[in-house]
Amino acid sequence: MTEEKSRHMTPDEFRKYGRAVVDWIADYQERVESFPVMARTAPGDIRASLPALPPETGETFDVMLKDVEEKILPGVTHWQSPDFFAFFPSNTSGPSILGELLSAGLGIQGMLWATSPACTELETHVMDWIVSMLDLPETFRSSGAGGGVIQDSASGATLCALLAARERATDFASNAEGCDGRLVVYASSQTHSSLEKAVKIAGLGKNALRIIPVDHRYALRADALSEQIQQDRADGLIPCMVCATVGTTSSNAIDPLPRIGRICRTEGIWLHVDGAMAGTAAVCPEFRHIHNGLAAADSYCFNPHKWMFTNFDCDCFFVADRAALIQTLSILPEYLRNQATESGAVIDYRDWQVPLGRRFRALKLWFVIRHYGVEGLRLHIRRHVALAQTFAQWVDDSADFELAAPAPLNLVCFRHKGGDKVNQELMDRINKSGRLYLTHTLLDEQFTLRLCVGQTHTQARHVRQAWETISETGREIMGGGA
Ligand SMILES: Cc1ncc(COP(=O)(O)O)c(C=O)c1O
Image 1 (cartoon, rainbow, N blue to C red):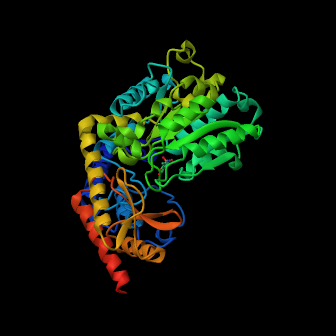
Image 2: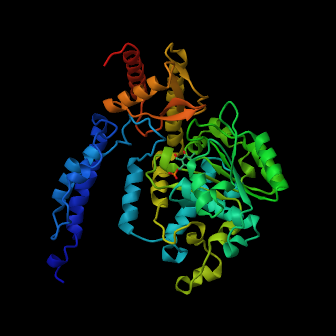
């Protein structure tokens, strides 16, 4: 086929349009604050603007980029706006985006060490860096029996932890025979829903999930955990895994790892710790107390794709005993056999995750760490926490609002004193205004607003404007105004 007919983009065209895309992204970063944070399109609007059928002949890149601007951008919720305070953040940064671009450019598939040694070795190396950066237990370092791997998400990490826990609890019989209905898993009522999904996928059945009550700080009650385990043992069941959380999704509550760890060690139960958002805080020595007791964990995960300025997807998953994970997930068909694997001298990360194939995710994380330096990361994390604490103080000092939970780091849970309807109305009006984006949760059955400071570019002025908008809107609602 001639070059003309193939329609492949030539290297020169790639240079031209690649520059155009990088310029577009840089312009987007400069103007992101000017957009309403939450997309204003109605369901179906975006699809209605697109042709019903795909083009029969190829189109020019200019036209495609124009469509991004005109048809796609209106339907984008701007997670990279400094006025994004919803959910937990899902950050990007310049070095991360460029790392992602390079990863796509290299286009390698790193399922085995042999399919791109640099992909595996950089990942192992960066994961060991993370152990040092966050001062994680040495059990997670690859030089011992453990090690780290980058997963797509905290959900994927939790599923892998549960599969390994299930196998260990059954002496590696459940892979062969399936589950017999006796395995049980424990987590607090505040644990992320990804655990319930994992329990279902792992074949334990949703009823195997024991929901343990929380204390007044929304942290798991270790005494209740202990009682439930004893009850289950008495009933002939097999406790398999406890999932503790460092920074719950609703309120950033921190489960008491030292007590939970002691219970798990005594009972021989796998302890998985989910630090999806809050884990990043441990780059700062003053916040490392969140990980007190982590040394007893069998596995741990946190998401640089939330708060460490690394774009989705990037979850760091560590295990203390990699053999248990590998034994659980490894299958070696003939077509994957190779000398490096047989030598036993290399890591094949396909055995550490659910899918076979894997992207070169370590590049973007490596770039972020090298660009900011650990000190640079600390600076931003400290700023975010300080801004959230200032916001919490404003709430606490206000006559109209109150704090709904302790705010240990960068998430503030609060509510207007006017009750659920007022808070719902407040959130809806604010999000509709486009000036900022907030989301909610239920704490003690009450509608609670959540403001999370964690977007890469959020500064003091954005948090101040957010508070002004929130308090003004509260006054409007109570005064019956627009
Ligand atoms: C505590 C916690 N765990 C797990 C998750 C799921 O994260 P992911 O999207 O990486 O699966 C979240 C998401 O916000 C979370 O807050």
